[in-house]
Figure 1: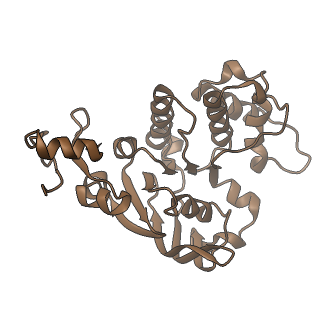
Figure 2: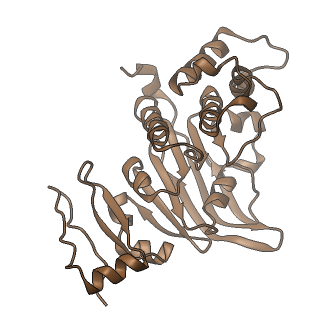
Length: 299
């Protein structure tokens, strides 16, 4: 049951306005206008090198815009005190590096630093936050182990626990399912959904898997060639045309028989050849209340 106080959590506004992002002289993202919808789960998807992770880095204050502004509650994110930002934005980057020999509980405890005053002792609230983060990520039994000893999947869940211990209203995650097997991918995304539904946490994550993005996100942002291509619900965004334009991929898009959300079935070269020469058209699958499947036109 959701605590009533959780429903009263502030809804922070995070947005980019006319932002250009560059690494040195190389412009990576242009004309970025994006508002992160509070209390929703948003997934950013796009091909490798499209700029999706760069967008996340800018929203997390890891990359300063070459032009334009990133605003948090109407204020320039890059001018706000670091501790204030860290109490609002939690970030799980790609491939974070832990200090050598650090124990799991100590790493997760570092998520509490934004809430601690200078020279203040470790509090009961800190202990409770770390215990809760370890529990919900299924890493409590790893608390005394060295992070160096963990598998890739275990390590990813520990990093997620550290971000959760930070107890921020906005979570930014760059490929949070990296290194995880399918079962743990679903487990992590279920956890993020629970945080969103139970605590009103705003979640913005970069994902590679289109079908997981469609299943778990309220809103999708497609990025192509350094620009936002399309923003909307999974039903609005994941069409045959969008998959072709953003990923250069022919695909069959149909309703997921379980959720009714879009399900993308990639058509590789051999599948396209077999389909055009030997197989009849794939019949549309209709789920009550959903549009019929979309297939690429025959050539």
